[in-house]
Amino acid sequence: MTEAIFRGISGRLHRFSVHRPHEQFGEAPAVYCFARPGPGGRGWTPLFLSRTGNLAKRLGSHEQWPEAQLLGATHILIHQHDERDAREYVEADLAGALRPAMNGPFLDAELTEAAEEGVVRLVWAA
Image (cartoon, rainbow, N blue to C red):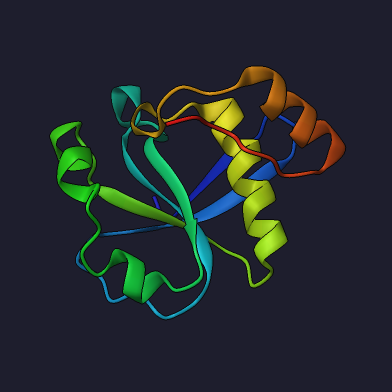
């Protein structure tokens, strides 16, 4: 599997490339997630979802990767976007729909409203 497509809470589809964690990542901005193979080896189950302005710097020694591995993560999925607003939108849209286990509790009303309006707001509380 070289690609993964996820539907956000807005209904929009977001395409990710699939990578092994040992790969060298460029300094590109992107939305990324740590994922394990889905049920029966079909598709992907996102465990952690976030965004960064520099993949190489952020993924070089990510503090969440060991925990993700304990939950079965085998790959890193990348959705490249240069614009910060676009990355924030994609992250919020997918967080509401996918609810990655490592991202914590979500504010459902905020997510739904933000995705429908195309506006990014706080999408989870610590």
